[in-house]
Length: 313
Image (cartoon, rainbow, N blue to C red):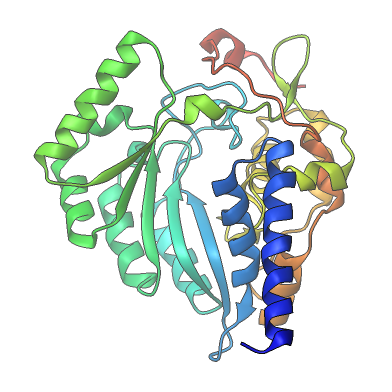
């Protein structure tokens, strides 16, 4: 190897190790740091004019069967789902503009979607150059229909179970879901998400979520959703948190404190490849200030239904 190449490689390794060290100091795991780095590195315009990206996620359902405090998608306060026909229209349109290496179907809780089998089959057909993943809390797999299990087997979509419950009843229901998947011959991966539960927003006197007012650059540095591009409302967002908050404000489920996020403009369906790439490659934006600028681990808790009934300001 030539000396100049050796120097470049040593600089690359040093930069990588320095980044890992800084990430760990800020509470970001090595795996998350590597994922974040790879996500940005993957952004480019392909030979066919489409934008290639590592990660695309879509909330099939806005709500969830759990009510976890500090949910990054704010699903305890949201409800409803996106019809399969509308999702297919969005997917078809954006598949002409972007090529994601990985497509994540999530929520909320995707197993709440009444047309989930159709959504999975449509996703496989439209995103035929992408690896498909469905992320669920696993609680409902013990009751899911055979049609959904057949669609998972047919498409070979990867099942990722994000374990949130630590109580006895929750553990039992989760294990029953695993048994159903085992019996159906469906492989899966389990993530113990309750071990890494971070504070994502503040709370007002009534216990409802309100945004931070952080330094945007500091919030960006510790963000775990960097380059996790999200498709919502037929628009592309640079991260899932911006998507959930902006959509939640429009739905009227978040109070006036969150309206600062409305200044953020997602990528419109008519955007060019250059515009998409420029938007997704940028780092901190002013709206990053709604997120925390320091990492704080919290104990997973479930929100009471009484709290959720209270009206927003």
